[in-house]
Image (cartoon, rainbow, N blue to C red; front, side, top):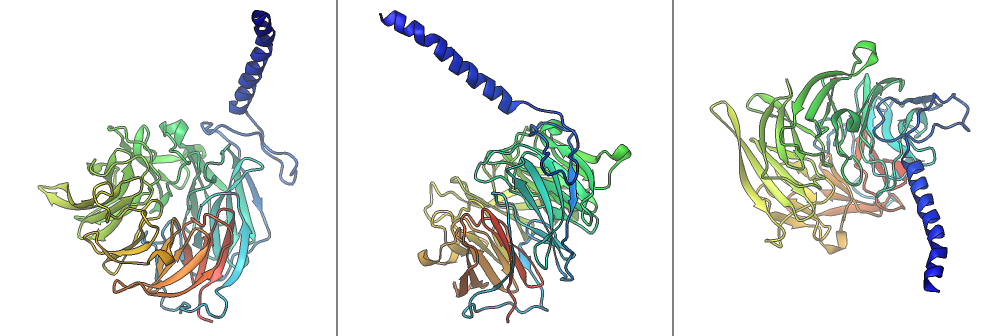
Length: 473
């Protein structure tokens, strides 16, 4: 009897398994597609696998107009990679008792944490259109947030704590972005016209890290600087297309140790008369010659798979590193001996051994006037550190920032918690001095990096980006 019963269910079980295999095959299949016709909104391209190199883009101009507002925040952490805004011509508000900063505009975004880059009255953001399965580069008017143009391409990105992650880099001529699945796109920053594309997975065998790619690309002297951390560690590509419109690779750094991509971004630095790019792979940190891509130095004293914050140069050849996942923090000292650059550890703090150790999970600390300001992972407080890694002050349990972003603006610290509560704190090592605060967002996971020009501050939460007028009224 039991044998007959089992034999009856075997065909049903096989059918269920067969359907599961079929839907898995459909889900993972790659398709070829043709260009979408502008205006035919009902027609959308099928989903493309992340490893497809040749792809179609769709460009659409809109009604937005560039603002006359001046100022530049042209990449992740601003013009000089410091996350510091300096503009003595603007007086910033130190008191929100009148109702908080004015919201100039707000736009809805796909889920993610990608912040804005700003130049020539335009704000640029790499969005994700979940409905149509497309990475979406958007150029917005700084006056009202209206789209000036859009450039999209099809790619399937599953929700994994949101989709978008990175801040694009922009110059007067070029816009460079790196998407969550490793698609690097360069286009005309004024018009949005497509120039070239490289998929890091296909070209360099990059392994995209958990929670999608979060490395913010940079443009330096007309060159796109990317760390694929695959078959090569780093590469420089001319923003201007080469022959037949293909990307022109200028140099590539060998990845002999097989380091893989982390969420950390590249930071330029000068030492001993040499310009270099500092990058944290999962196997260590290296300094790469900006001239030809040679490895000038590398060390494995700072290595981890989930490195998110970027390196912070603090002067005199010192570089500060901090991360979460029990990594703590480390200060590295560069020195030149017989023409070679050596590295030494100044100090290291390990939270597994020292309960007072500093570590931060998401946002890079800000180095300002000889001190470091960051969010301490263990309790979510804003802290001020000296260059020995010791806490000078902490914000207290009533003023937690948690995983939110921070920056310094004209002697003020802007720090925003997960809910979008923006705190304005005096940027001094003497004590924690909260000047004012206001609820500027009303969603959740307000983790996107901040950007500011001419007293206009752009912040975002999981699904909305807003522009705030921070000037004294």
